[in-house]
Image 1 (cartoon, one colour):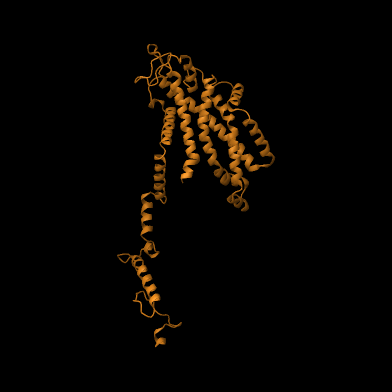
Image 2: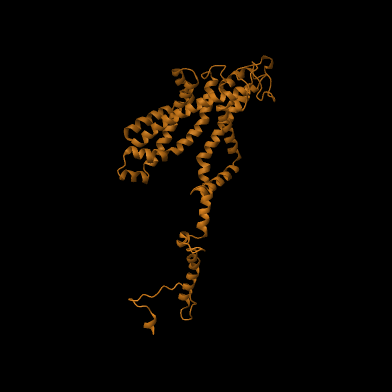
Length: 361
């Protein structure tokens, strides 16, 4: 009887898709078959759909979770739609827990808007004065009061943002490009070239930044652009040190060694692997140096090395108002508060970029 019922090697038995109740003699094996058949039956039916059409999602075992994931991706306009929503939600929570960071970002946005579109904030001419309105205090008509010639101080601060931001951007760009290149060459090439570059950087670090800027201005001359270049050159050393340390770290990474072992050219390794992975801390340093450059440019303008009057540069406004502190405190205080707020805001954003966001990920 057993030979008649069991399939032989030459006569393969038919595939039985039906489930049977477990017998008493084989409780565990039959039970496992029944459970497996019960779990696979819905997937077998879903492979052909309600109308008998073949459904590849059901045939390859895509369950409800995978279908919901696909719906989320379609709603997110791409494969990374759901990931973008998660990142935006986490970013919103990150900002809600840090109101100081939100205020700092708002201050920076206002300063940038004032630099490019000053007419958004005021329609007054920063160079035109009304003599009968001399030394008027802060009011609804003049938010920052008026100066000794009847000029609106708020209009001068807003229009002076363009000059100060222009000088600051030039200073940061010079420090970023020159210092980054020096650190990149020193860290990637090494040997005696690294020794020469880093000894030059050590000499620059031994001189205070403001004194070095003053020495460079003496050689270059006066003016906003020249002040910016001097401040940028004085900040080259810090960028070079940070870039060199990051390049030394990345140069020993496994993926860099793998790229070299495959026969990649040195410039390909430098451009595609070393430089992109070493730029993060340098960009954070540039954000931090932005506030320092604002303060340095304003300091040099305060000393008279920046734009000549009546140009409404922030340092020049503070310098011109110090002679009237006894009866017109707003001439110096309010432009000084603007400079301080800009510096503190950029430093707060740099701190968030450096550690807080990365630590919260």
